[in-house]
Picture 1 (cartoon, helix red, strand yellow):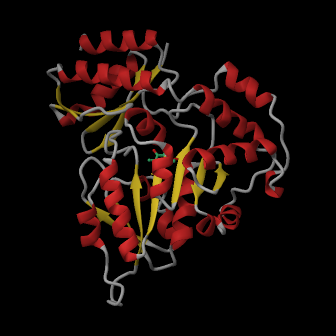
Picture 2: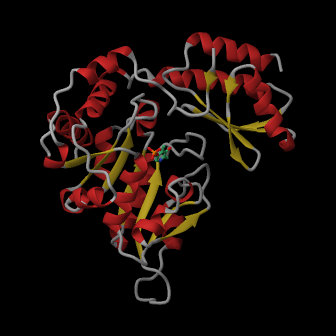
Length: 339
Ligand SMILES: *Cc1c(COP(=O)(O)O)cnc(C)c1O
């Protein structure tokens, strides 16, 4: 038995999901004639109280499209120094949109409205790039699955209004935040201009992200998606997995969070571990007492069939998910306690 805790992207479709996919009604989505894709887009738009939603193969493409929609070449996006758009999208912000990132040193991947105000370049000072967009990530991946305080997100909205900036949410793991916190999908919809959400993380789909947003800003989204190579044909087979996951895999995210909490507790009691970041959702980030032991720590577990990942800088990561069963959990906790 391999226990794969590297990421919540390693899940495979369940039997029920496969059956939903195989029986999907499909059409050519480039003509907008795939009824299952249309149904998924409509469902997510309704869920977040927005007029438009568009299906994408990846979260990266959805985020990259959002960056393009909100900016012109030379502009700047304000984001946290741990942001996915900065670290993990292959430099796409500059490659696709010709923009730079103004990085904020937030706390656990999150910053404040004050930080944003300080980072905005005065529009009439033509020496500096024009600030066009603020981007936040919830939950914050490199922040350790941390959840934003909704009041702070509201304050940032006000700053965006005052300075005529776009406001984009990278909601790859928004589902985890929705389950962990009282704020609703509609609350998020009211705040942001655009939001990307991933179906292939905690929800367990093999593929799929959706960009959700306002009518005006989303007008050009189809064109940008086509340019990036994301216009797909009978893709309802994949959208069907998304619809199935929204029905069956949302509530159970609580189980992933519970397991992550239990792992946190065991890790915190181990001598070889210096620090475990507070666990809020399904991600656990921790540091070894002896940073140099990273590789041997990972190897020790790999030899026992447990896969964990390194975040660099001496930080290790564990992510719980749909395919991490109760049986695996018991086995992993026992292993941890024995090291
Ligand atoms: C996974 C992830 C994405 C999207 O990644 P893809 O692999 O391109 O689907 C975007 N943002 C965050 C925070 C993520 O964790």
